[in-house]
Every structure is written in C-alpha cells, then in structure tokens.
Amino acid sequence: MMSPWCWPRRLASGAPRLLRSSDATACAALHATGFAHPWSAEEFAVFLSEPACSGDGIDAKFGLAGFILTRRALDEAEILTIVVDPGARRQDCGRRLLGAHLSRLGALGVTTLFLEVDESNAAALALYRRHGFTQSGVRKGYYVKPDGTRANALMMRRSLS
Figure 1 (cartoon, rainbow, N blue to C red):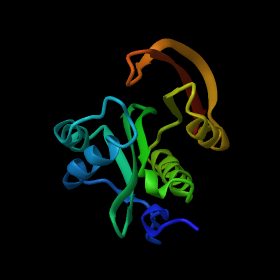
Figure 2 (cartoon, rainbow, N blue to C red):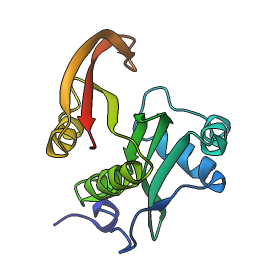
Figure 3 (cartoon, rainbow, N blue to C red):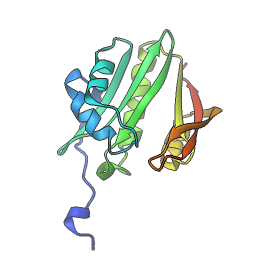
C-alpha cells in the first residue's frame, strides 16, 4: 500500500476557469514542475495582461492544478504552454483543460491552432492526438534538456472550424 504522502492529489470538481493576472505566481510555480527552463511570474504577468493571450486553469484543494495558455493572431492561435501538477496527472485534468480551451478559442473565432511538443513527451502527444492534432513538421534540437542535450519539437496543428 502506498504511504499517504505518495497518494495522488485529488482535483476539485470545479470546471476550468479563465486565468487572471493574479494567477501569475501560481502559474510560474506550476510551470517549474514541468519544464527545465520555466517562465517567471513576471513573464506570466505579461502574458496574462496581453489581450491576445488567454488561458484556462483548473483549481484543486491544494491550489492551481493545471493551466493552458495561448496567444491569438487573427483567426489562428498557438498553445504557448500547458502544464498539470505532477500530483494531479492521470486524473483527466489535461483533457478537461484542453477541451474547455478549444471551445473557448472556437468561440473567439480561432479556426486553426498550433503547438510544439517535445517528441519524447508521450503523454502530451497522446493528449494532443486524442484532441485531433496532427503533426505538421519538426524543429530539430528545439528544446534544451536539463543535461544540456537537445530534443526535437514536433509541430502540430488542429482545425477548429
């Protein structure tokens, strides 16, 4: 049996909500759990204050459990980042976030959505493929890993119309 400190954190039953400027610090802390080169609270504050950027988050009893952030330009958008707290993974958080965000972007008139993902991130690739994203290219050596080696980014796209 797992020890209590190893039990997964359970998500609150709340629906995804719009990110606010006041979420910048929580976004930065959560981002640091998933990326070798995380963004700062100041960077998130800038993104969250830009009219072209929008994001959704899911809250849990312990705080922000996950979020997604995109930037729009006319009828296209790019997912800038998506991250789920390690203790909340495999609990449907990513699917709920991405689904809600796709609906929000469609309502804003976005017809095509793009993203880049580390080719070795099997969980993210599975999530994106389940939501209809297809590979459109490769960026060689795009990501710098913690050990200094580089990983390819798969470029993906999805039509929302």
